[in-house]
Amino acid sequence: MTLTAPTIAHGETRLVPSLAVSERYDSNVFFVSGGNLEDYVTNISPQVKVDHKGRLIDGTVQGGAIGEVYVKNPRLNYIAPNGGVTLNLDNAVAQLVRGTGLKVSDTFYYTPQPPAFVAPGTGSQVSEAFVRGIQAARANSFTNTGSVIGSYSLSPRVDLQATYMHRRIRFGTTFVSSTSSQFFNTTFQTVTAGPQVKISPLDTLTLTYQYQQADFSQCEGFQTHGGIMGWTRAFTPTLQANVMAGMTVIEPSNSVQYLVTTSLEKQFQNTATILSYSRGVYPSFFLNGLPLLSQVVTATVSHRLTALLTATASGNYAKNESVPAGTLDYESYGVTVGLNYIVSRILKATLAYTNSEYKQHFSGQSARFDRNMVMVSLTADWN
Image (cartoon, rainbow, N blue to C red; front, side):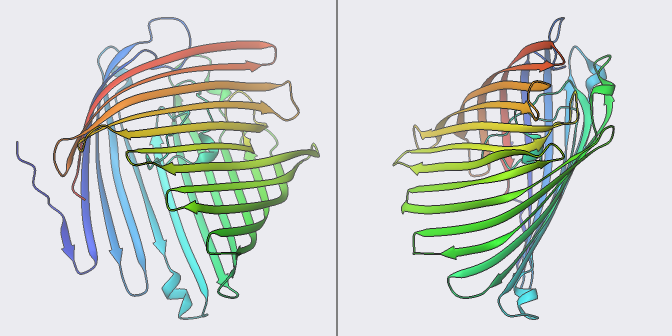
């Protein structure tokens, strides 16, 4: 079969389709312990992206679907839509007030198997607030994330920036008995504001006030407010570090917690590495609606073996504890190793193995399960 590039260009507008097809062995398709849980799954994912670059507006609209077919559990077969839009309105709003900027985005994602971890660079449309190492039992879920980022340039070195993010997750049909009442429709809103200062050509300092509000469908929510200081340093063209630290107060419990987000990116001749750690307050959407003190560590290494073959390895570890402590906690890890081979300019083949383990403790009861996956995939991207 010969694949040709159907990219269509009309001025500054490009239509970019893609298609991914994969086969995988999955040792645990229900995300629980006990019983015969394994299956063989075919995944087909067509996607379309439209990029537009105009004098006043730059934007991207994308959409598609994921379809899966199960050999042993055909009742799990599904087709799930996803999509999103991102608009850069900087040039348009600058016509009204010089120095202002505005970016708007919105994404939606439907799936019966929301991921516990997402590796950097995958372009997942699931909000980070709901990807903190928590793997709930299999259930239909709808996730929507919208954001608005506004900025104003006070001087060549100082910008003011404010953001608003609205994230929600809704649950439908469950596939494991007795779990329907354990899911909580959750809305999580975040507001930030503060200056960004370019203190040198290599260093950027940020001072941010952050307010968060979580609302649950079946219980009382919570709020947080606090301050964060950030520093980004480009040591060399191939080494960059980012550190953010601060404090927040969780209400109504009045618990004070420290926040940390840090990352280190290093590019070698044939190897790229990313190491990150974050400690923040996020909502629990499974078992009990509570604020979680969430810690996640992620490491990713990519090594180019040849011009066409690349080996990758990534690891994730998460620890989530309820505030106040003792009511609910999750602990999990996931490791993925793989090979990526460039078949042609538009076609890539991937072989990957993933091992993950999940533990949870709630109201004096404990549960744990693991999951192993082997996947072979082909992805055609007419970019």
